[in-house]
Image (tube, rainbow, N blue to C red; front, side, top):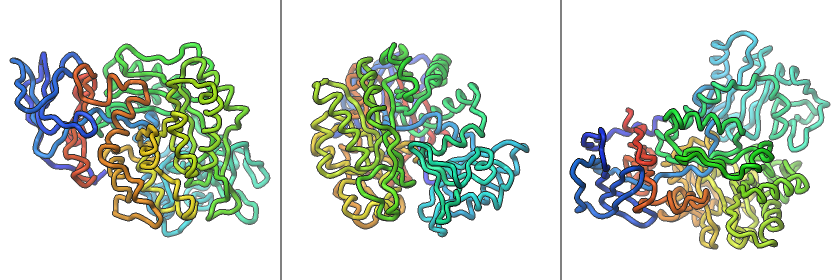
Amino acid sequence: MTGFSVAMAQPVVSDVTECPEHWIVGDIVTAPGERAGAVSFSKGKIQQVGDASLAPNEGACVISLPDGAVALPGLHDAHAHLIGIGFREMRLNLEGTTSIAMLKARLADALMDLPDGQPLTGRGWIETGWPEKRMPNRDDLDAVAEGRIVILGRSDGHAAVVNSAALDAAGIDDETPDPEGGRIVRDRNGRATGLLIDNAQSLVAGLVDKPTREERKEALRRGADVYASRGWTSVHNMSVDAGEIDLMAELGASGELPIRVFNYLVPEALDAQAEKGKTCTDDMRVCVMGIKFYVDGALGSRGALLFAPYSDEPSTMGLQLMTGDEARPMMQKALDAGLQVATHAIGDKGNRIVLDWYWKLLYEPQIADHRWRIEHAQILKVDDIARFAKQAVIASMQPSHAIGDLYFAGDRLGSERLKGAYAWRSLVEQGAIVVGGSDAPVEQGEPAIELHAATRRFALNGYEGPDWHPEEALTEQQALAIFTTKAAYAVFREDELGRLAPGYRADITVLTADPFRSSWEKVDALMTFVDGERHEGRASQQ
């Protein structure tokens, strides 16, 4: 991304071979609201924290941070999809597409290099701001790729546009019924437009060969490398297939996993994982924490489940992807096995439903320290905000969603429902545990962008939008906490991760500039440490 071409002096580093002890000297944030001038670590653990007068032992390796740079506790992305981040590097990436015309041009370029008969898949388009003021459809794709199967996912992963060849190959016509939890979008004449929402995407899944084991492993490796280079030290990895755990463990064993990965598996993996409970490799690089469920879809594709119709599409109130009769027995099984539950809920009705499920399963029987989560918690009824703290439910939220959605959320919801939208500050001040993520590859997965969004709550170009409630922005300390101390708590690691203190693991993020004192495009990663192992950041690789 061009905004991150940061030029600056490199850190001064003494000889790092066979160092018994490492020191970082400079501007160091040890925890939200706490600073130091020096920190030392050895054997993967923090040893000393203090001011710059602390004297390194003989033979220690010293990293003197350049002016402006800052060291932080290792940053967690508390909601991302690691394999999707890797596949974004390997497939047609439609991020940055600014019109249907550009989408067609990118599609044409990609088709030139595609072997005959091979379907083309891609992801990353989002129609916000396009001059055509609509989503793409089958006719747009047919104009470029008639006869070639094309499947292009929206950035949120909750919708895809396909061409006529794909519809025909999947047996989808104007009479095909909507699948449960999905919608085949049709025009006013009843013709399928090529847009498939949520579970309707499964109708074309069989048209594309599943990635091989080696392709999945390579995607995980690339995703981890990308994330380390951007400054993340841990990721809470969502909707993970069980087979990916062994692949990550293999990468870790061969020294190819530069981040920690806390995994939440797909529901299909529940039975097998329930026999094991939570699991973790000895080095805490690959852990299975729980199971990820979905109650609804996304706001942008109008799949988020609302109490009242969408303001800009009164014919729909969104989609419920799972019923209580389906969800509660599985959640009870996870609870009995000691697994966390993390449930995707975006709409106000979707969030109410999940809070009610959790109430029955956890609050009424007084289950302590469960640390169950609601992923996104985007649109809330105002009187549901207090329930997160009362029920000890973690709100796992993604600040960058707010600065992207502000272009269309008002149209979808109207001003009244925006009062409970992206309500980070209200949740924190009412006592809820809020953790911060990016939802990459839905969003870019940049720490600088997430911290900008959390504290400034306006788009990267300065746009705020009407009725956007700037009072819901977080303070600097609150924003850092959702990516450090609170995120560590969410994976039961608050005594090991999330702060720089003696005895804690030496997970450290070093940035080129203080993200709260600099504009987002001037902030990039110089390096990270995980268990004291150094990995070069993107700014050091340029």
